[in-house]
Length: 350
Image (cartoon, rainbow, N blue to C red; front, side, top):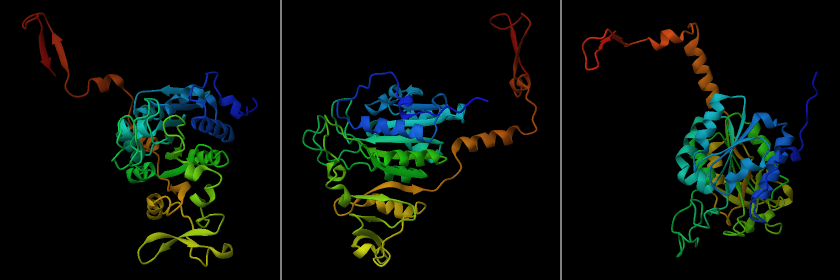
């Protein structure tokens, strides 16, 4: 009997030169993904990474698995074909805020509502990096770029809110250098049966450097970040603050927590299946509220490819496979003789 081979993170590093800018947050995300693949026992021959266009979409070259570097915004469509053709494959989609939410927004919407069993990693740097710094669908109001020299006046997309509205059943969020948290978060996403949508804030050191420093720096992170855990109170600032739902106005509010007594302060217990609270968490204005990270929403339903396979089984039950009969089913044309017609033949409808 063959022994089971255990792979390390290094086994998932390809022999290709990694060609991101020095200091790019994508390096940290690549490392976290390789850690995750080893942690969950992935098999390189059974794993596929699919990407579109952009800095993030170089990912398939750098992971020692199968991969498709496709076209702008179409990674969800290609990934759907891959999964339907072979449901046993473990499919990962790596995209960016421009690739996934601009030209690819429609494809992303339908992937999420269909609930294909795959993992979507949306690397959000709030800028177009590969095409030299134009503003993207997630760029903040006021962002100055080559395409918005006076500052963007567009209201940005909230990727996780988009996913929730599109019907995603697993939504999570992290950031590039959160190496202690991201691999476990990606493992949770992988364990979910259906589309797992994970937004990862990623620093673009060239065109949008420091955009997330207010919550990623060690100095500000405790006050700025709320790491959600299922069944645990929503505490932050080293346990001295929490989130409470105002029962009159049905809005979230920050409350002080004395001596770690979250229950007395009315702090909410995180319930991943509560879609209403998930939306409230995503709508929180950063600054007045912390940024919610971790698994924000998770409520599984049947995955798309399973539903398709079941439908096919039901449709074919009790039927004999006969390709010849299928081709001749319905109206057919036969060409007879050599008389009549422009080319000396007559056609008869059967």
